[in-house]
Length: 197
Image 1 (cartoon, rainbow, N blue to C red):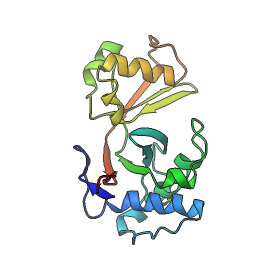
Image 2: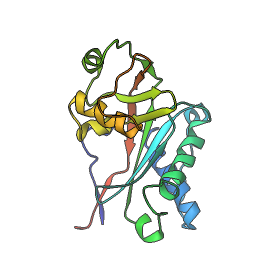
Image 3: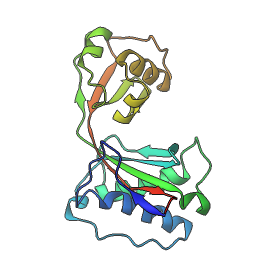
Image 4: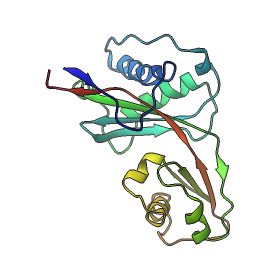
């Protein structure tokens, strides 16, 4: 098996490239698999928030994350990796066979920005498809979509309708008390695997 080049859009540099490896080592440790962890750079000791996304053959296998920094980024990566592998309620716990097929992506979140939208049309105009992650808050209702979701829902109206449903609200819901935040992510993914050599 050989590594394929990174997908377009994935940004990987010397420091950020350790994030998927740290996530993999955390998952491996829970499974009793030996997977050496890289030496963490100093920036990982600072507070940070991330989402860890797991895929197998291009299909989602788990995604858990934090919206706001409340612990060191290294701890957030490790904890969210374990949660994505073993605690995502949409999937059974990951096993060793699946671990061997896993592709891991870590998305580090920027600070949140409250969008000053007085109505839904104004909100649609403010959103930047393919760039913005969005958080919706209304009372006890809360949900987020990472910027990657724009790939499936490229129209802001569709994007927001699905986000509201995810939060447990009607797709056409609007209220002046609705709070919409946006953020961006820096994505770091493992190189792809191929079986052809």
